[in-house]
Amino acid sequence: MRLAARDLTLAGRLSGVSFDLAPGSITAICGPNGAGKSSLLEALAGLLQPDAGDITLGGQGLRDMPPRERAKCVGYLPQSHEIAWDVPVRSIVELGRMPHGDRLADPIDSALRALDIERLAHRRAQSLSGGETARVLLARVLAGEPQWILADEPLAALDIGHQIALLRHLRKAAARGAGVVLVLHDLAHAMNHADRAIVLDQGHIAADGACEDALDRDTIERVWKVPVRWIGEPGHRALVTG
Ligand SMILES: Nc1ncnc2c1ncn2[C@@H]1O[C@H](COP(=O)(O)OP(=O)(O)OP(=O)(O)O)[C@@H](O)[C@H]1O
Image (tube, rainbow, N blue to C red; front, side, top):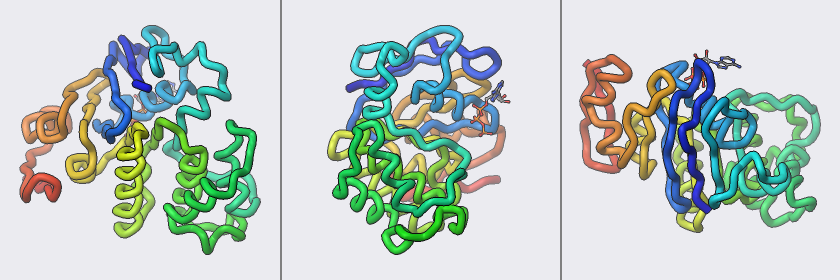
């Protein structure tokens, strides 16, 4: 099912944003602070109603879908990583199955494994470190086996080992047919791990395309206003400033 936005507008946050995303790939949403990345992701998750324009999933308007159906199709990880309930980690991950009305062990165990939190399954959620909390909330999203995984800065709190493990897991999910949309501040992660980048600047799309094009030096200098150059080979690029 394709996920598409048409002329999405939200006062002061997004202006005429349009794109069409195919499942089976990873899209990075990049842009400076306040560009509208989180607002866009929230709108794609159906949690923020645009003032104008619409979002469709498989051709059907997102706002017309029953919430449970929408939640089955779209898994969303918000930017702030907080767990309000002091319950065992496994119970938090099980919440990802709520739209399905079950607690199937397989997807829950597989999500715990994917985020390397099996040994934390019986720990109280509020006793976790920041990075552990982020991994638990991601596991909750993965446990729902959504067709679309939307994650806002999923790598921000993770150490490099868990970052790479998560990116590999998301790549496998995409290879199995899921659509993955990640808000990423780290442009090298976007360049090396996404298939497509959508660059937002002040609520507008500044660039959209294959990462080598959409995140080229000119675009970064124009949008982020820092002098940069890429070094290394495709797939192993590093961004150097100055
Ligand atoms: N609830 C809100 N009401 C009104 N304006 C908001 C609201 N939330 C965010 N904004 C504004 O909308 C713009 C886009 O915010 P958004 O959080 O989407 O940006 P972002 O690209 O995710 O930023 P960051 O990289 O800092 O997380 C910002 O100018 C922000 O101040």
